[in-house]
Image (cartoon, rainbow, N blue to C red; front, top):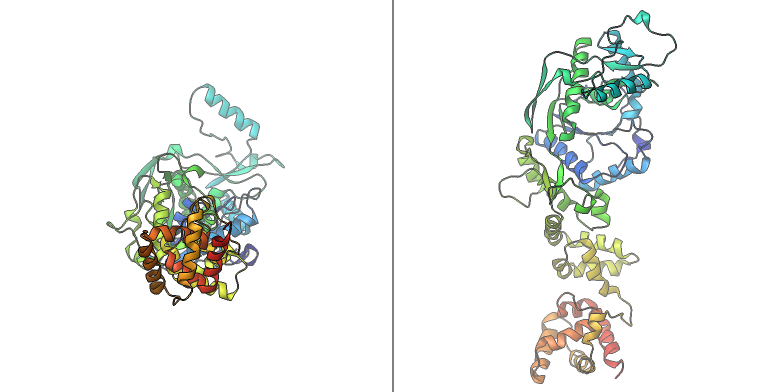
Length: 489
């Protein structure tokens, strides 16, 4: 995955869309924090829509908020998207690097009469806003500079550039998700497109970048619906200034709520994508599948491959209502993908968590995976279940396991060691030998298996006891049994 320093100037100029045709989508996060679950789903829907229509999926880092944008956040976004397989089809665009282009368009709009220099001071704006509040009427800026003669502009006084929003009529968007939405133009203010320091605002930069990148479909959260109407003012103005400015198709997807219907928060599981991977031990294909089903579905299908997702996805099938995030369902889905995963891959992932394993340890992990992964829901559980394989003697025994190692049980361990020592060390003969011993003593097999598991693993839970014996091997198994059989006897 490319770093910010590698790509900061990759697409800083205009005309980037010249070589593309067909559907072009984009994911445009602000690097002010981690890649959260809602952002990842937005990226996924953009990726899928582009793939479904044999189009192009682009990534743009909207880093114009210089005070809050950080390099670690940028790298976390790249890392999370890479883990999910949602990297852009081309090097990412960095919005701040295109500031000169944004300012250029702002000045074009002023020259063409679609925007104006506003010299109202912050104090004047505050006074007008407070007057509106006192009169209990909505505040809508009426700047005397909107139609003022430029010759009357004060010299050397700071100003902002505001777009001239239409004051009559209405604007309608046929949204791909929400349907037809209409807003009265009187509700749209003359918002700032260029600050007094000459830097562009987000509202201007987004429109220009989408145009220059050739974006045909803007798929984003429904908290941006109001922004769409404001951004259309710039698009419509630029259509009159120069040709080639197209209105993109909009698809505003609903936000994600917790299972209780409240706004998604950390208590619901709203973590950074890196936390799902590192702290929770989830697999990317499980998170991909779960995000896919948050607000979209294909019949009763629950397990959906990437290939099927590309074939089936249609943005028009995304529901209008908020999706409900259910952490339990995500974990259940992860358990499925864990059981289906390649053993060599899982062994490598667990080895990273155990650390310090050599080639023989990695080989043992891979050999153990078929019996370990059926008992685990995530990589944390899988790693915990594998630790007994590499425990050093004398084995640490947890409280529950220690409770099984009574004097009677220790005596049985000594007898089991003698019984097993001469056996062929594979599951069937070992099982036959212990069953015979249990029958001779009039015991259930569990009376032997429970203390044997405690002695071999130090716990009361593990794969089948005969699998454990085979995995540990004759020498290590008998040594662990002997440690417990001889203690305090």
